[in-house]
Length: 77
Image 1 (cartoon, rainbow, N blue to C red):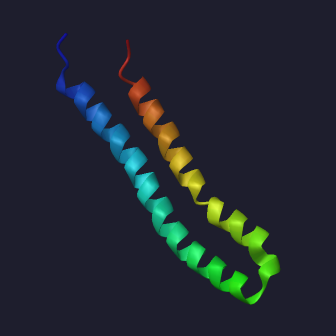
Image 2 (cartoon, rainbow, N blue to C red; image 1 turned 120 degrees about the vertical axis):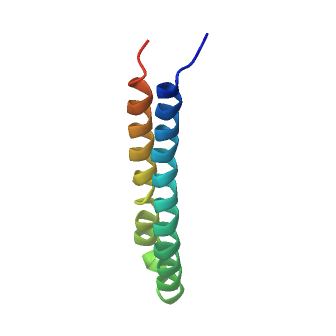
């Protein structure tokens, strides 16, 4: 079964969508995680807020995965 260049470019686009979201989430978590640990070192009751704020950037990865799935779905049957 032959695969044309368009299918390969769709796969490349899907990979870039997922990678961009993951890199963005990693950069955001680095900044938020450092601030959250610093805040928890001073006041231990901020653990819950710090945990929630650390998890929020993971939605970027989920959005990137949804976009990648939609791009792959464009390939057709």
